Image (tube, rainbow, N blue to C red):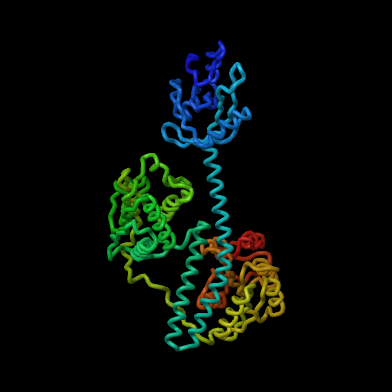
Length: 548
């Protein structure tokens, strides 16, 4: 490369040893280039050509359309002689590039600014990892915040649910009962929303049940019709009959919401979203085509089709990567489709995409069908009969720091024939238990309380009576309850908020249970015969920091 290449709008020249210098620069591991004061690239080395997409063997000067950040960097370099910072841009091929850039001013023989020597380090991957780490920390913070909000909301919803049920038991007025049923329904809906927020924020696995997907799909369509802009038309191709499947309704609903929002965002000018389902049979070849580990069999196929922009081949390779998004920061975090594929895999499902740039995309999801299961064979668990005298004088110690929750639980238990004692924190609960150990049959306690929390109180009670029967009330998602307490059988876990029947059922189960009668204060025995030390108990329940 001869030095005519470096002629710019201002005088710029190299020494007679230019060829040697340029050869050395080409061996450097940094992207090095020389830029005129008007943002024309006069020289670049091999690495710079690779990073920015310029010809690696050099060529004619490249004119750069400087953005605001580069303009500021040039101004600072001319004024102060140097500048350093991150620059984000796009290569000639369209790839996003971020560099740690160092600018140094070059002056001519007369001392006037002539050009700028720029040394760049490609930090695209590093910055992406940093962004992902910050996003993950933000999600963790959201999960913590959601737990705190859920605690407060559950303490509001709990008394509403129990209070409405208690009033219904005391009146035969049809109008009052109708209004109370509406209150109960709204409170239960609020409780479901709280659980969904907690499950999603904390990544809970949820509960798999035999379900009819048709109803959930129709709910998703109705939700989209009510919330999406009028320019987006929603069409339904959901048949009246579909096989049952095993799934977690909350997760599948979240999956459908994510797919439909993604479809809407792919049609900024409006368009049509079609949601459909069908019973299909896949042979081995078709199943493997969809996914390498796909298996032949009967499936419920669900599709979400849009008439949007479609997905390029390049983006198609990355759309399920966490934090990958083609949207602006205000539109998405890049977690929507990542969540979708996670849910599909958790249900042993398959996912296939049909897309064409400029014409739209279709997401096809396949969930294993339960051919032998009939819709009319799936019913709600039979409600247990309750009697005003079911308590038969059994004494329940109720411990909760929320006055309304405490009062409502005590009144409800007494209305069913139980004797009660109450305490507003773990310390008071422990003192009550010490005074009335022989009288108390079951302890119902919140886990997050001031002065002394639930786990600490339970440990102290166990030191007095290893066989104490506990119903622990917590805002933890159900799967986390099971993971934490499944092998500590003498503790019943009741997720908040709960109904009067929920609480009565747990108390009833605790009273009828003979397990948990440990013979020493050092160990507790699990169903599989393994002994749990107090240290293990501390690991599972200690500190109370994670309980809401």
